[in-house]
Amino acid sequence: MQLGNFIGGKFCPPHSGAYIDDLNPATEEVIVRIPDSDGQDVDDAVAAAKAAFPAWSRTPAAERSRLLLKLADLIEQNLEELAQLESRDNGKTISLARRLDIPRAVANFRFFGTAILHHGSEAHPMDGVALNYTLRQPLGVAGLISPWNLPLYLLSWKIAPAVASGNTCVAKPSELTPLTANRLAELSLEAGIPAGVINIVHGYGAKAGRALTVHDDVPVISFTGGTVTGAAVATNASPRFKKISLELGGKNPNVIFADADLDDAVATTIRSSFWNQGEICLCGSRIFVERARYDEFLERFIAATKKLKIGDPLDETSDVGALISADHLRKVTGYIELAKREGGSVVCGGNRVDRRGYFVEPAIITGLGVNCRVLQEEIFGPVVTVTPFDGEEEAIAFANSTRYGLAATVWTRDLQRAHRVAAAIDSGTVWINCWLLRDLRVPFGGMRESGVGREGGFESLEFFTETKNICVKL
Ligand code: NAP
Image (cartoon, rainbow, N blue to C red; front, top):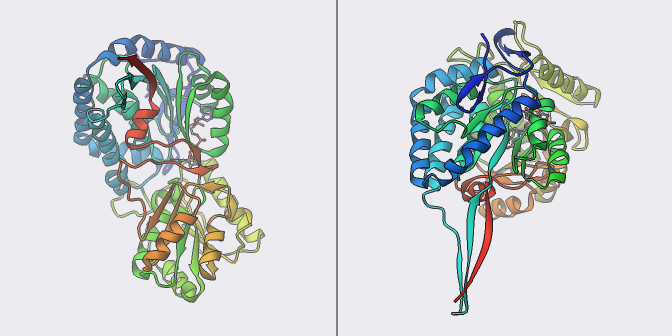
């Protein structure tokens, strides 16, 4: 079976006639073949989006809202099918796809579909002399590039605000996970979203993705992916003066003080370490525990990790599924080997699972210093390090010891310390005694090499619009 690009409301073959195999990472079998799109396909998609822009940008906000809410309803009605597609395509467990990925896609369309009804702009009366106000207008064709780890969740996080605020878009999902993007295209037609408003081009980032970032008719790029790719996107898009948002990688610290509720800290750290096989940008991969409770934490954490069931992602009872690809499996197991060479001990897991598919046991590593490569570089798999610390100052220094700054978790019952440490950690998000809770109204993004710009809430609507300063003499 072959998928097409979704351009101008129709599913089209790629100009080149070339296709890419999309594999199920749990079985290594080909699920479907997707277009290996090139610049010509991107040109077609941008042309369709550009043609749809005048009418869509003039469509009243209430009507855009109605259509996006209809799309949200359709995603919800097809939740089970979408969860199965996501699980087969990505290797994530079906329980997580049902609980996290698909409901968040519904929430994204509902949130931005209603946010536009409440989003205004400012007016500044100048003491009877003039009225100065800000006019917000959509930018045109938005280029949206997303990764494979939370395929529909992150695609909807970009499509929903872009389209809600009156832009049309061309999205390039990861070529490793095209299935839910394709189903979203079908559902957008069913919802009645006009042809050309949402376009989806499949294919490799270096070809189709790059073509989007350099396209003269695409004034805005929203990118989520790795830091190295983000630099390439910025290099290509910046000289063309595009508006850019970059949501990049992380090496997130979990700081656990001795006064923490250890039951909660262990249970939550299991999720923040190994959910989605550790393939969530917000997973904590460096765990720092105050020395007085280090042994106790480690013992309980290892025991809880050993209870995780690794297996068929479509099995309701599996806790850990397959990594996304053979390449990624090599990268993750390579870091486990590197940890040993750097002098660390793998105190739990870390072995390949003896079955077909890209499975590896969740790994816990101890005995490494904060400057080792394993604690500096993003692994993006089920591999965490556990390190003791002495006192608040050292905890903050350890947390801040990488180039990244995406998310952090702090565990303590001391209210003042919680606020102090949260403010001192260089991180776009800090969770205190919890993980992965987020109100969609708050700005989201990373510091340092974890990203540039903020998305979320009204900030996303502002990102996808241009402001004009209009001053009327009275
Ligand atoms: P990636 O390799 O950087 O790819 C991301 C997307 O960019 C894919 O669609 C990719 O296509 C495309 N791409 C690759 N080269 C490109 C180029 N030169 N120009 C334009 N697009 C290009 O990232 P990934 O491996 O898919 O995802 C994992 C990374 O994403 C991790 O680093 C993770 O931390 C990060 N992430 C960050 C956030 C956040 O919110 N900060 C959220 C989720 C994930 P191909 O698939 O064909 O390469």
